[in-house]
Length: 353
Ligand code: NAD
Ligand code: ZN
Image (tube, rainbow, N blue to C red):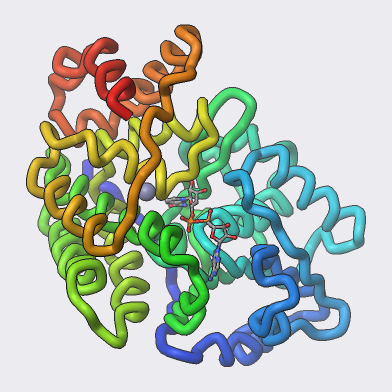
C-alpha cells in the first residue's frame, strides 16, 4: 500500500515576504482573534514590532529553552480559552522548530478536547485544528512542512502525527534567519543534512524522496562547504526539501539515538543529532566524513561524555527509547534490523557519545 499523503497547500517564499503576512491573514479574519505565538527570543526586537497584530489579536511569547512538552501545550491552550480566545481565526507560529511545533499543537488542541498527551501517536486527531500559519526563523528541521509536532510527554517523546497537523500556510522569508547564533545555525542546519543522508541511504528510499533529498543535500553542501551570498535562501529551501524527502521515506539510526538523548538528558534535537551522527561512521560512512568537514570549516566543537553520568537504569531506558523507534531502524538496516541492532550495540554507541 502506498501512502496517500497531504502537504502544506499554500507557500510564500522570498526575502521580505513576511511583510505580506498582514494581507494573507486579512482573507482569514472573520471577527475572531489572530493568535501569534512568537519565540520569546524576539521580545523587544524589530521582528516583534513587525507582527501585524490588530486590535483584539493576541501576541503570546513562547519559551523554548526546553523543547515543547505536552504540559506546556495544555497550559497555552488553557490560557487562550480562559482569555476568551477558544475559537480564534488563526494561530501563527513564528520561530524555530520548537515554536513551529508549539503553534501546530495549540491549533489542534483548541478544537480537539483533552490533553496533548492523548494525541501523541498516529492519526488520533479527529477535528481539523484552527487555521494555522508557520513562519520559520531557523532552517533545518523541516517542521514547516511536516505532518507532525514533536512533543515530550510524561511517558514518551512522540509526535502528534496527522494530516491535520500540517500548516495551512507557510511563510518562508530567508531574511528572518539573519540573527541566528552561529552554533545554533549549524546544529539546526545539520538536522536537515542528516535528514537527507538518512533518507537517501535508507531502505525506504524511492524516486520521490530521492528527488527531494538529493536537491536538499546539494543545497546543504553549498551552504556549509561553499560561500554564497544567498546561503540563507538556500538553507531555507534545503530544509523544506529535506522535510519533503523524509515525508515519503523515513529518518534513521541517528534520529533514533538522538530521541534517546533528548528524552533522558534534555539534549536539543539539532545538537543531539550532531552528537549522535559523528559516531555513526559504520552506518553512514561518507555522510559522517562530510559532516566532520563541515564541522571543521565552521569551527564547531561538540560536547563529549554526555552519557557518562547516566545511571544504569537511565542508560537502559535510553536504549529502550532508541530501539522503540522501529521504522527508523528498519529504514536504516532493513527488515532484519532487530537481529542486527542488539541492546549492547546501542549501548556501545551511546557510550562513545
Ligand atoms: P528551536 O526552535 O528549539 O530553537 C533553538 C534556539 O534558537 C532557541 O533558543 C530559540 O529561541 C533560538 N532562535 C530561533 N530562531 C532564532 C533567530 N532567528 N535568531 C536567534 N535565535 C533564534 O530550534 P530548531 O532546531 O529549529 O528546532 C528544534 C525543535 O524542532 C525540537 O523541538 C524538535 O523536536 C523539533 N523538530 C520538529 C520536527 C517536525 O517535523 N515537526 C522535525 C525536526 C525537529
Ligand atoms: Zn531531525
